[in-house]
Image (cartoon, rainbow, N blue to C red; front, side, top):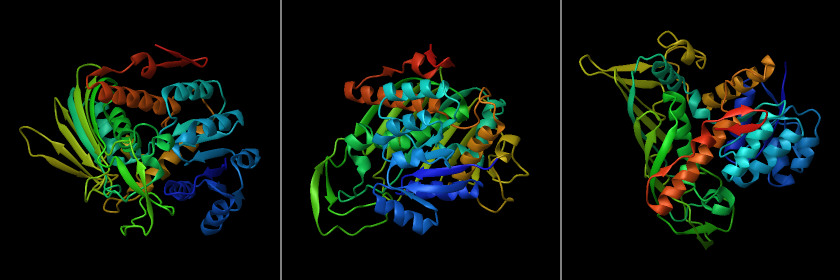
Length: 396
């Protein structure tokens, strides 16, 4: 079955979707930017046939089977809802919506539809993250005692660094936690299979006022020169966050997120401590998994299809020594999504991150924000995150 896809969004992540889709063997037939001119220039640059003038025009295109949403956060709920109503499969960038009421509604709509609805938690698809999950699931790691880690970046290190994500009205009240922390939380949930039952968070806004350039600045643009003309903008979203976690069953955890950590370009790390062994990995060295032992030598597992289990093997396309990285995770996520659609059995357990996963992360974010504001431990509403979808209802 050959799928045809339209991508909404032409900033940093939109073209990454286009590349990943093409590598996954999916045809991109159209693209939508924030203006008709941006749509046209992006279509020309990426050799895409159609440049849409509006989201309504995109949805009206009968050639489009699926829509990928790489638009600002504030648009996700409305656009995802419209995609479902138009009977088009939809894969949305995180966060799924601006609050849990919106994401819960999207979960219900998705459950009552005949379309696949996914969220792009692509980091799950690093092969050695899949290997880690396989080892925990199969008991190789043993009972999980605790998991720690971080997600550090430096692209907002200067007060003159600016992007729509820093504004609460565009990105939500949480920024670093919602933007990158949710990737860590989703990955850890995928690996250890345990729900977070309580959080204790402390957040920091390093620059309560940022200097916005009068021109446009793209995410990860790499520009370091101070703009000629700027304007002061109040910022309430966090640059840094430190979160303690309690998991259902007794395991403990902690994570720190930062977008002002000099020299850390895009480094997610985790370390899982189990009763039999420990595992550690970071995204800047994604082809190596550290395996820790107490009474025997530690190991360093290099990504190699001959050395990993079946779960990781499904996300490897090249021999050992031929590294796979960030762009490959998009390809593998998209393959999982479209193979599920092609199989045609929507009652089967999804093999990709779903709207339920997107909803879980928003519920967690709301608990984290409440914890920070009230400076205390906050229980995560388990009836919202440990749910069963039955005829569109979220049940405890």
